[in-house]
Image 1: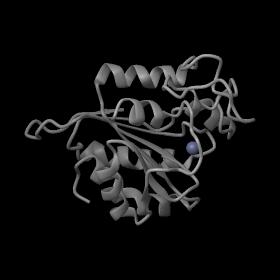
Image 2: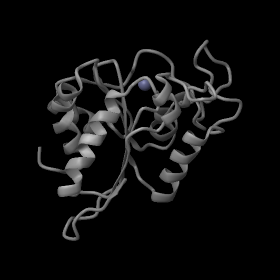
Image 3: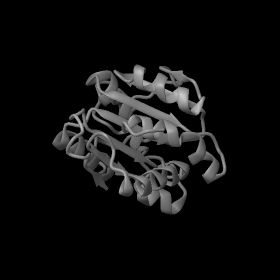
Image 4: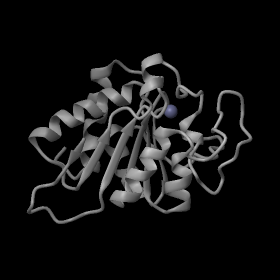
Length: 200
Ligand SMILES: [Zn+2]
């Protein structure tokens, strides 16, 4: 869904938020749907697109990968994209060959959005790539998760590799622990609203 800020708002870099690039991480879908409900009555401070579930086949089937068994978060056309992979992390035969990754990269190109926030689970951290450090630190103040620049393992072809490392965007990987849905929203509402320049 596309949200436009009020006319008096000073233009700021556009934002895109998405959940469930991994289909077995539905907590992000819940939180983004709650955020969208709030944005209907109070628009964000910057132009914003929200995609609650990127990997809808995976979400429907409860699997990390998409229907072609591709880990979409290894499939982006980053400098470190590689078809070599660990079992379960197939990046596809070509970068962005899957419709979900292709559509997301097209949306980013067409909008020029540079504040890019991916919701994942089950870790508990606000991870950043590229120019995302100040935003990550601020979001971590709100959810208390702590901020980190290293998720602890290599991520070739990841969203953060392409848009953070290669392009220098503000990329946030918000990792939400396994919580009851309402509790996950309660913990992350302030961080997500802050990222869209809303009162928290
Ligand atoms: Zn994930």
